[in-house]
View 1 (spheres, one colour):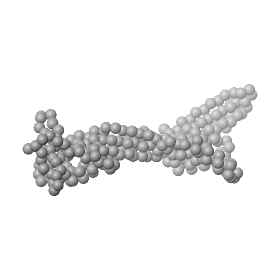
View 2 (cartoon, rainbow, N blue to C red; view 1 turned 180 degrees about the vertical axis):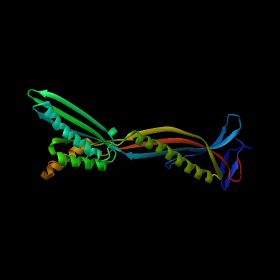
View 3 (spheres, rainbow, N blue to C red; view 1 turned 90 degrees about the vertical axis):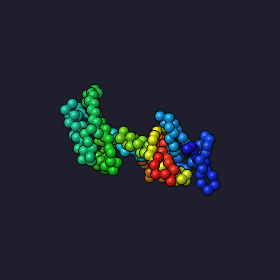
Length: 262
């Protein structure tokens, strides 16, 4: 019996010649759907439904890096080392109290002499996963250490775990979209959708949101010109997002809805 189908008013009928049914599906999740025959390795025909599904998944950055700097100048090495070390220890204690692990801390020190004075600079780079705790920690340091500490602008980024999760979610969502549409198409054709025989990811793309730094600076200058009270205003840093897209092809076995077995 020939498994190829043709749509006719009132239902479907088998054809005695080679043919193929194709549907171009404009809705999201399906690019192309086909019902046709494919030769398996042993030479018998397999009735399949091929569906191409797409999906996009976005996620904001889940990490932020902040640089905290302190420095001082004294007449002796012991004096400058002691002065900077006290403030450095206070910084480390403050960020640890806000849930920062040792693996997320990097400390650098530099001591040099200029004529009769010894200069020492220390820098702490902290990686936060909780942005609210980051803001609280920076506020406390600015309040307690005042001008003796320099708090840099946070730099937001995506961790490797976050990126992997976004990519996997895009692929899974594309397969889910393909399965949903395949179910609808098989019902329309009066067929029963069987198990998938092949799932293939055909294409993946990934891009990050663009920070319009020039526009931000222009908007900042415009606000400064309009209101002198905002002379010290600094535009808040944007939290970037990453988007991953996936396109998959899924093959399902199909059988006549009136039949109980393939």
